[in-house]
Figure 1 (cartoon, rainbow, N blue to C red):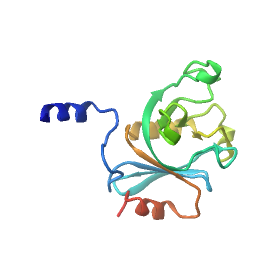
Figure 2 (cartoon, one colour):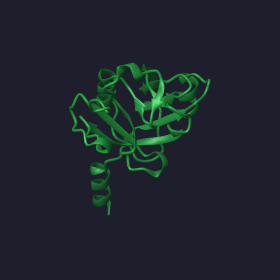
Figure 3 (spheres, rainbow, N blue to C red):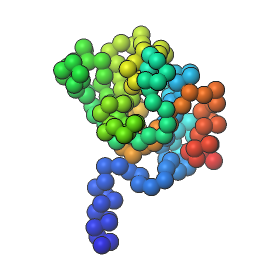
Figure 4 (tube, helix red, strand yellow):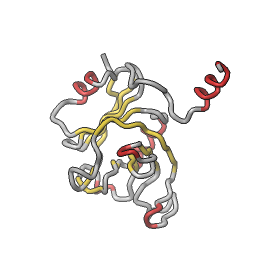
Length: 167
């Protein structure tokens, strides 16, 4: 039984298992009010970036979710555009999360082929970033990372403490 549990923990696509974020774990916070994302690691806010979110308030879901799918040069199924194409609206990276019971392929943090959209309420529900910034974040955020999406006047510091990402 221990061997089976050990194997499951090692090969699990979702890591870390259990309650998280724990202080020190990577954690992402998106504030739809400011169209910003914060990357928290080691109990510090390491980076903040501007993002684009849903063109209406209900399109980008709010809550605590988990990054479950990561892809380089993602394929855009909706319009049959291959990854790596300059016409691909998903840009160079995709980090999908499990909002509203989805499988990580519906909602995500991704790049864009339209840099002018960043900072605006313009997406169909995803969180858009500049390609260079989403590539940096992609390399730092493992599958299993929690992402909090809110619309609030609270600071990233307040939210990180409230959700246990920092002490």
